[in-house]
Image (tube, rainbow, N blue to C red):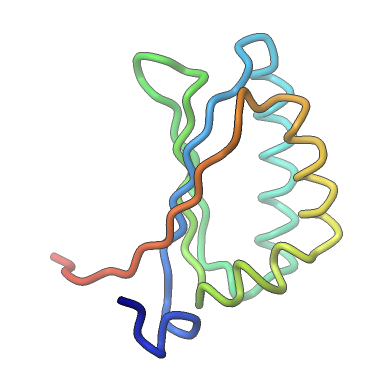
Length: 108
């Protein structure tokens, strides 16, 4: 069940995807470039971390911290750099990326 605060509280966006094995360098280069733009231009983005599977380097986990889900799904996805990146990503993704939205409940 979603609360009325779903769109306005901080959110962790977890993205999992598989990269075509022969396109890893391209994917790294494009992701690095778009992350620089996001961090420079979008204050609602509080951080982005990219992880590669230790046993399968073409499986990636991207963890992004955003001020709100609404900031990610609305203004962020409409940015020209994101529109361009989403088109480019189709050339190196193996299948579709999976997006999950998480709210922190416990911190130590």
